[in-house]
Image 1 (spheres, rainbow, N blue to C red):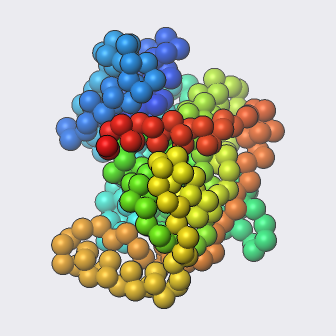
Image 2: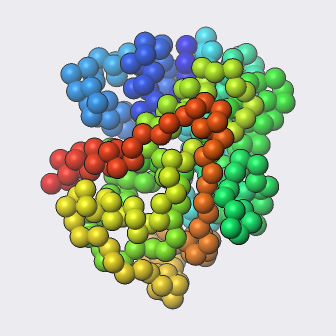
Length: 336
């Protein structure tokens, strides 16, 4: 039996589909406010006729990763665990919520893996938990970590990684992947899905800098290949291409039939936007979207090295533009 956490998210939904298509017996946990129908909808993008049949094959268990009794039920007869559940926020006021879900929740998963003698755990982290590079060098898995310039999300994901490494020291076989921005269909109002909405609105401005990008199916392929291998106690950067925000928004705009952005956002404009974003958050209680650390990361972008996964697995990444075109086709159908 394979257990998946975060099964109602972008990575989790695609992972579940992959496992089910390969006749794997799957259990997934979900919270009361989870949108299970969205998982079935993602399935329909790829296997429309069999989406319901595959979805019904999942053994769903109502459990929060901080609810130990419910998790103990979910872990019964489980051999392998994919831990993709996480809270994503870059708002400093969400730090303690992030720590509870990302760090303490991961500690719970690790502890239950150990007590249930799980054979292997695959943890989905983030490139934000990769240490910064010396200027002019690519970031690798060996970069030294410093939390000084990290945002609150990265801080808690790094702490979660420490829990996973702690598990490895106690005898649990683990692998960690550190994905960049994940491109995939169906979650248009959250995470990387916002990029499609931004490009569709045909804004004339684009932010400076860039980052690493990867398709969701490559993330799933990497996870499952590592899980089925004898590789243990290693981490891998999951980035297919390093792309500027101008380039990615232009590619998306073209696929959506929109005008590509042509004007770069200046530092003063970003700082002005940060000020108004702070006021909006103060008045409405909404999450902050632009912080000092956000702006600093835009002005000092990191370039990520994916050579380790290529050398270790002979991994070949799928064509990013083909996936973007596929996603944009679905986006236009669902947002006419």
